[in-house]
Length: 258
Image 1 (cartoon, rainbow, N blue to C red):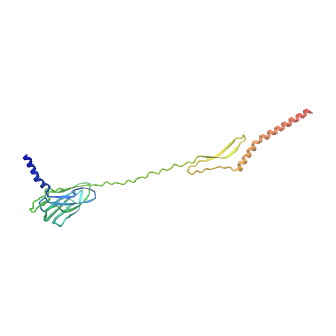
Image 2 (spheres, helix red, strand yellow):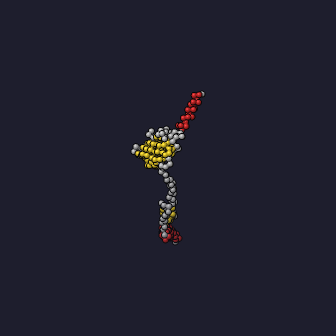
Image 3 (spheres, rainbow, N blue to C red):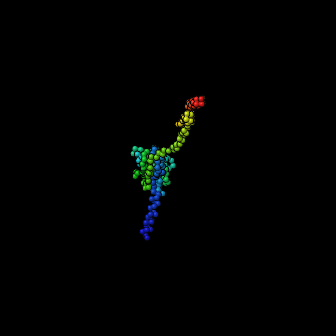
């Protein structure tokens, strides 16, 4: 039981110190960004509870193949006395900034703004190196809780809007006109039969054209008259034969009476 109480006492003493450790942090410390875009992050110096930070050295690294520093802008005024030896190197991916505070800071203080450009896809880890320091008035380094930042750079997916294709309008099939047969002429033959002839035109478009072959009435009358005349010739010969036969019979009977 005494061992458990001792452990709990140690945790109660150490927990506030770990939670309130002095640190260098970034806001925001994570995020997703498109290739070619720019974004900013703020750098803060955070004293531990009950401590005073009189000076700090920021030594930061970033992946130069993924990110490019467009600008590093130190914050001035307030407790920030001066920035000394500020340097940014996009070839090696390093940022260095030495800061003096007067009076020393006892609360979280923004010290700089960094604007990055996202160059290529990948994870961009901003690290606080071991050279970073947070010094109190006795030049004791209090930097025990600094954490970096992690950004994700991706190429945006290009979404091409799809233009709807209108449905084809149905085209009605060509209307074919019916086959038209129209009698044109009538020829009466000798045996009394009638023959009808006609001319038929089939239209191949929706507007049919019907061609009629018409025989004039005068020609029709002449044709009928000729046909009647031709059909009456045999009857004339028959009557003539009958007359001749009648005359012969009459003459023969008369000779018998005499």
